[in-house]
Image 1 (tube, one colour):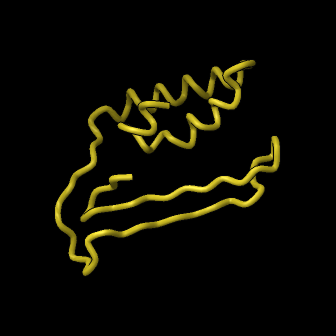
Image 2: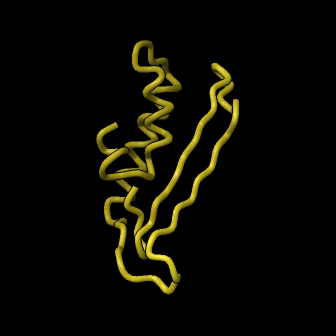
Length: 90
């Protein structure tokens, strides 16, 4: 979760879903965790680049939500991205 929240926001959703099964992981959860690790290994050279953008506003925020989309418990999922220039900061 530390990597997902601070260094690699692209894996935040996958690690959040996998964290639900920490107390009793099954084979599909281990396979999903292995898939995330293979993804990380394949994207080691990817990075965020910060530079000015042509947009008139320096901060741009996007958000999305899935209301009741979790089939396990009916909970909602929400997410957001805050950009400064061309790079995501949150």
